[in-house]
Amino acid sequence: MASILALSVDVEAEGFRSPTTGAQGLGTSGGRFAFIDDASAAWHNPANLTLLPEWEVSFEPTLIHHEARYTGPFGTAKTENPWKFLPALFVGGPLNDRVAAGLGVTVPYGLSVDWDWSQAGAMKYFAPHFVDLKTININPNLAFKIGDRASLGLGLDVMWSELQLRQDYSWANLFQNPFLPDGELRARGDGIGVSGNAALSIDTWEGQRLAITARFPMSVSYEGHFDASNVPLAGSSRTDFRSQIDFPTTVGVGYGVRVTDTVRVEANVEFVQFSRFESLRLGVDPVQAATLGLPTSYAQQWRDTFTFGVGGDWAFAEGWKLRLSYQHYQTPVPDRTFSPTIPDAAQNVVTVGLGYRLGRHRFDLAYSRVFYDDRSISAAENEVFSGEYEIAAHLISLGYGLQF
Image (cartoon, rainbow, N blue to C red; front, side, top):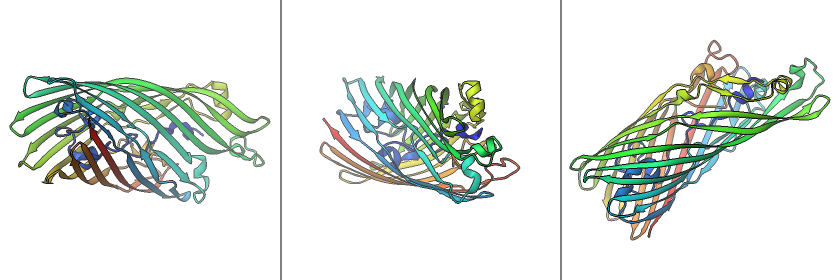
């Protein structure tokens, strides 16, 4: 039972971060800081909002197909319901010749895992079969031109988050009584966090730009409850809880070069401070926690990570752009705290995108193939969740923008 809540914040992509947001952002995922030049700059690099000649609004949802497979001592299993939908809305434009504003509404953390444990024996008692983390982040920004060669962006992040979990558990094992039926634990809680972001873009030389972006740390305090079914002599039980998730600080650096009048290339490095997620603490009544076999905290001990990438675009015809990118992600999840609820591994990501602008209308499409390393967890390092894990993901982002 100690594993039930300790792993209830998974979202399947680089720890608990969602994939790159927006069609231009995904199409040039490995190089999206220095040259991002549409309304989605409100999320990627708000300093570049000063590049927008007119106000623009865009809707840029992403479809994700994610699946994982497990083979280990308990048997085999795979995830179900692989398709996920992540909406994104951006608005941005000039207030005057030196100040611009923007707004991003995004899902920075927001996928789910739905395992079928029917062929994996007792695994259903050690890992949730359903975990869902929802977030909605509202991010208003202001950008200011500093002289003729630099721009500064400052913004606020207000994020609502909800987490849900469902896991089977065995009263027979807990009370050493083989006649007691299994039960299901359902957990739900939500909360709001507030933080900020900043960015700086500098035109270093003709056709070259340096960008530095940062999203500051955020903590979300969750309040909710657990519901347990088939409780002996009671039928059901509910207990309130409080918890907190410390979301990471991120710092990105990008350098872009305009190679020709039609070709731009950019390299990015990003630091993600996942070490903030040291443990998941649960504010549960000690008596009720003991009755349900719940922990009061559980170590995660995630590691800080870096991502490295390169991307670019080619304006190959009037109004048309082709985008390409490669990016490598490290995984923050060590073997000793890995679980199938967090099927995460190092990733190599290749993306391709296509954009077309017709007058005031902008249309974008991007596709990304995520190649995960296979994850092999040894019994010596992590006995309960030892086994082989195979993970695969495909992403499609669509975008429509309108200048007004």
